[in-house]
Length: 348
Ligand code: DAH
Image 1 (cartoon, rainbow, N blue to C red):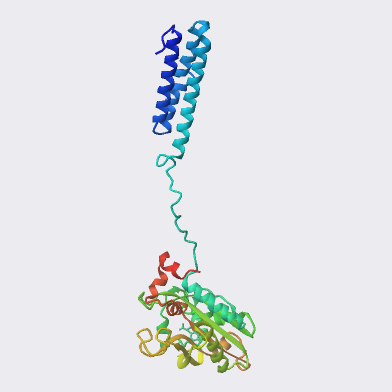
Image 2 (image 1 turned 30 degrees about the vertical axis):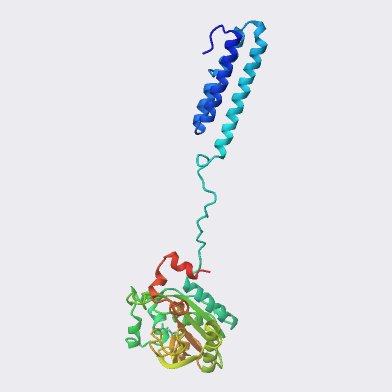
């Protein structure tokens, strides 16, 4: 403590001691809070020790004030310098500086991407667009007539067994295929018609490695005067070569659908074994990619089109199956999984 009426010697000694204690306290402050407490103790506006030293000047004899004033100023300068120095060193110090590691790599952002089925549909649509096809859509809740009757399914025909579905009551059901979009489009627009109809269809199928009760289909339809099976084969072969590669081999096998006559399944050479035969193609060397055929005259008539004047062909395929071929997926259920780690592998 500074005595009430100090001598010059006492004042000078006290000023030196104060400056030393203050500078040491600032230097020892371990964080901003400790430094602020020390600042208030020594440099505080109301009861700071430096203020007491300043007031002590007035109690000195007049001839001592010049030397004492200089000592006071020195103490003040020393304290302020020590305070500034510690402030600066605390700011740049680690680890008690800002607790952020700015060198840590940022977490990568999931930017979103298209689902493999959407990628396949987009690609097929782009190929057929060059051949003059546009996209048409139809409702997922469909009438029995559009789903079956207009497509030449006789009532109780065994072909309907494959199309067991979810009935919504009053002749309404969840469509089992995209083929009803053929009739809806033909009713609305006069030929020539070239459309693709992608969409979701529903069947009472188990959910297993190769089936799902709701899945994507892609329908194609071309109607005009003078269209023959040659157009069907050549267009679908061009498509297969564009989609799977220029040297892709294709074959057509006779089949049956109520709405086409004749009907054919189209196969492409197995993508995995190159036609030698493997487990994916069940040893045949071929993979079935779609059903197709010449549109049955009674489908055209059901849609109000003159079947003597117009002919055409159609196909239906499963983009999910195609995505499995393209991306080598072992289980169709992966396509219904929202695990972004799976989706990110093919995302574009
Ligand atoms: N609608 C058929 C199905 O879901 C697929 C199909 C086969 C569509 C032949 C066609 C076609 O347009 O010509 O099984």
